[in-house]
Length: 92
Image 1 (tube, rainbow, N blue to C red):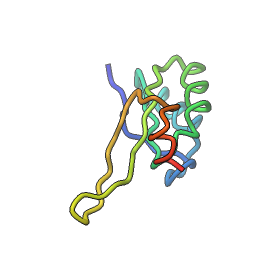
Image 2: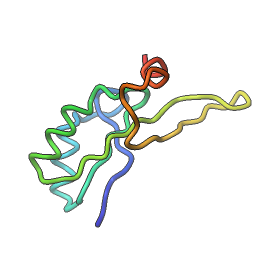
Image 3: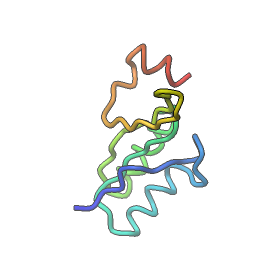
Image 4: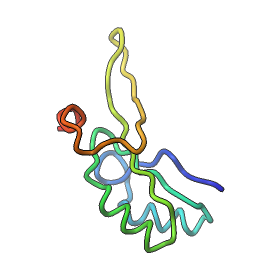
């Protein structure tokens, strides 16, 4: 079982739509796909629908931009609660 657990779309700094990501993943023979756009979960509905259409498992994710000791860090989260107030605030 092969999944791509780190993809971006045009909802952040990617060059393809969530639907195009799903189509490419299916064409490559993957089983599932995570959409981990930077600081946004806005692409999830499109990605989930496209993954279902292509028979892929959809893994909802997000890549949060943060800092530690004045250094930029990107933190990946999977199956996060998209309605959690702190996460919603962080992604605005």
